[in-house]
Length: 116
Image (cartoon, rainbow, N blue to C red; front, side, top):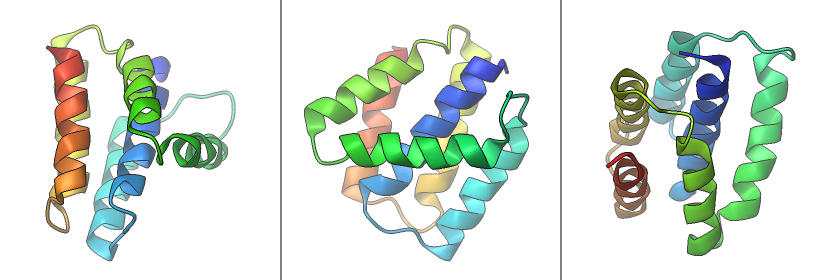
């Protein structure tokens, strides 16, 4: 996975936790697993990127249109099937950790539709 893909995936994962406005311990553990499994090779430490990502996610969470644009802007770096598959797998892992809410299913469907 390239660093651009890691950053886009972190943005999607962070946005994903804002979808149902609830972060359970199980979801947090799945998120941590995702963070660890993709690695990091950024100029700045991952925690700095995550803080900025949270700010970006908060800005788009209240608008379906803004969320759709945000997703579309992030998925463009996943050009190959392997990176797309990994992104979907990690998003699903986070969402199902504490039960898949309707809003989470919709977010996941949007990401998958962008990959089609």
